[in-house]
Length: 89
Image (tube, rainbow, N blue to C red; front, side, top):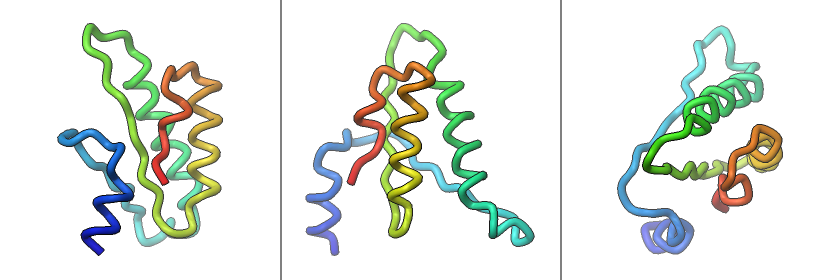
């Protein structure tokens, strides 16, 4: 597993932070909506002009390919310069 993860994450810069979306028990059926709102909120932060530019990488989990495709398209629509690189995997 460690070897696979190392190869899978070879293009992700070291350091940075990780985020997790935890849904309230009553809203487990709204994962797609929560993800889309999370991405919009993160893009709100990323699209503010700062002297030092940060890059966002999303690492998909099983069964989330459709969300990664949406995130790339949405980032492009929002004007995120690195929209093609927003997802890994």
